[in-house]
Each structure stands twice: as structure tokens, then as C-alpha cells.
Image (cartoon, rainbow, N blue to C red; front, side, top):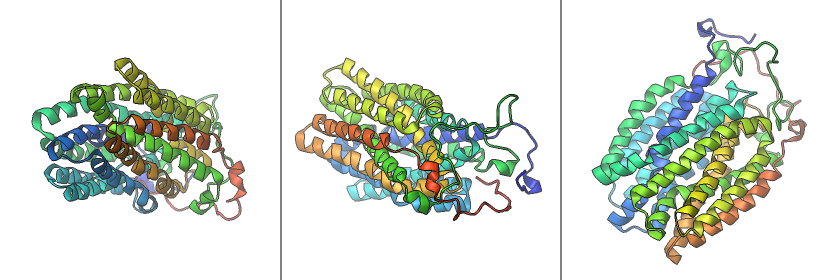
Length: 439
């Protein structure tokens, strides 16, 4: 039995890993509803009020998201040093301050400054922190757990029509101020659900043993051998191929997130409210994909699942670019939502499978430096082409070609062979230091 401080001995046998999944889903829902999925609404509002170019507005989104990549290694080190709860608590306060700053901005420089602050809060309270908390709790059902956490993104997306109605009825400034209040009122209590180390609570990954089932069942595509350090992971081909594929996937996602509503209102004569309903449809389908993606990722090779999903997204974007009516938009929503929902949550679990969980925060943080390049370029690429050509048709077609190319990177991102034998001699086993109960 691992060493455990007496204060950390649990008083209940209930498995606490699922609490962390619920907490992670709540944070994902907050960010999706208030920023990521609803950002297209603000693109239209700011373009109408200030006359700003779509590429200029998209650059602000890029300013927010690129921080996750630039701060990834530092973020991972902070998680390892201070724990998930402390880092996420700071992130929530910074996010609320960023939304308040956005609500009072009047010029592009103040907009960019507010997005910089918002992006810092999103990073510290977002994907890396949440995934770092969840992956140590699961082995057999790791992909399922991360997928269920990601359902929060879809739940947040379902709230986008309400955000659209509030922006139309109350104004975008009031909606952002309300969003800052919601971040603190909902997010801070959910911090208590975020726990990182099962051993600190006297529990094992996946919960209590069940009669007739071994504690640790092998996962398809999981590399054998010791957990890799960051330096060892950087020397594997899989690290870089996963990074390239993930970057292209986020390029697609960010381009759609920022510009879909503008495309629907500008080229297909949708109202903002009806375009928001398309966002809700995409998120419903994405939720179905997330529920399917967990069991699929636990059963099949994740890198091949991701490759197939990227092909589906490429087809969906071509359909959207050529859309002439509602039927084509629905086809896009089906393909894009399902593929995004299946692939997205698997990106954290595949890295835990390939490189282990001991240094997951540092490895995932370094990975973000690579794949967040796509999150930066997607909105700017689509927005610039739309400003130059008058609509998004060529832009979305170019993004579709990038999605198709990403499928090749994912397909060849096979697990490191026995973790390439990299860490067997150089990485000593962990000593008997007491684990921390703080996330």
C-alpha cells in the first residue's frame, strides 16, 4: 500500500475519480458557454458596432488562445508544484477580471489587452489543469472519463442561444459582466471537486476491484515500460506527430468557432439567433460523439480514430463552404460535431497512454506549445481570406485541406515501442514521499 499521511485516510469508500470528472465538466461548460462557443456572437456585435475587420477581431481570439501554448511548459510546472486547485482558483479570478475588462473596452488596443487577460484565465482554469487532474484516476476507462468530462463543452454550447438572446436583449457589455459573475459564483465552489492523486485519498485508479475482473486491464495502444520524462518524450516521433495533428485539429476548431456565425449570417442570411441554434445543434451532436468517443478510445487505437475523425471534419467543411441552404448546414453539423466530439477528448488520454502519467503535466504543457499554433492560426487564416475575398468559402476550403493533411500525421503517430526503452535505467522509481491531497 502506498505511503499515506494519516490525515488523508478516507472516511468513505466511494470512488472520488468521478467527482473530478464532474468538476472538470462544469469548468468546460463555463468556458464553452461564456467564451469559446459564444465568441462568434461577439464577432458580429463588435463588427457592427465598431466597424472592425473580422481578421482584427479574430486576432484577439488568437491572443487569448496562444497563451495556452506559450505558457504550457510553465503551466505544467505550476501544476506539479502548487497543485490543480490553487492554479485553477487563480485562473478563475483572472478569467472574471478579463471578462469585466472586455465589457468596458472601446478600442482595438484595449480589446487586445482584455483578451490577453481573458486568455490567461482560460488557460489556468482550462484543459491542461482539468486533464492533469483526471488522468491519474483512471487506467481502464481513461478515455471514457476524459470524454465524459468533455461533455461539458457540449452542455455549454447548448447555452449559446441564451447568450445570443442576452446579447441582443441586454447588450454585449451587460452579458460579459454577467458572465464574470457566473464564473466566480459557479467556478469557485466546483474547485473542491478537483483532486489529482488517488493515493492521497487511499484509493486506486479506476476504483475498487470488482469480482472476476483484474485491477489493471491493458489498454489498446498503450505503450509499455516506465513513465517518460519530458526530455524523453520530446525524443519520440509520436510526440511531434501528435502535436502536428492536434495543431491542425485546433486550427479547424478555432476557425469554425470564431467565424461560423459570421458565415451563416453573411452568406446564408441567418439571423444571429438562428445561427446560434446551429451552434447548439453542433454541440448536441458533439456530445453524442463524446459519449461514443470514450468507449471507442478505450477499445481501438486512438491515433487511427483521430485520423478518421479528421477526414470527416474535412468533408464537413467542404460541405459548409459550398452550402446553399439548411440541408448542407445540417450535414456539416453532423460531420463536424460527431468527429470533433469523438477525437477531442482522446488527445489527453493518448498522451497519458503513450508517455505515462507521472510527468503528464510537463509533457502536456510542452505539447500545448506545439498544438496551440493551430489555435492561433485558424481564426486569422479564415478571417483574412474572408476580408480579402468577401466571404468564407475559400477560407473554409483551405481549412478543410489542412484537416485532411492532419489525418496523415495522426495515422502514423504510433505508440513509442515499449516507450522506446528510454526511461528504464535513467528514471528511478518514485520514493516513499507522501502524496498531496491538494489537486
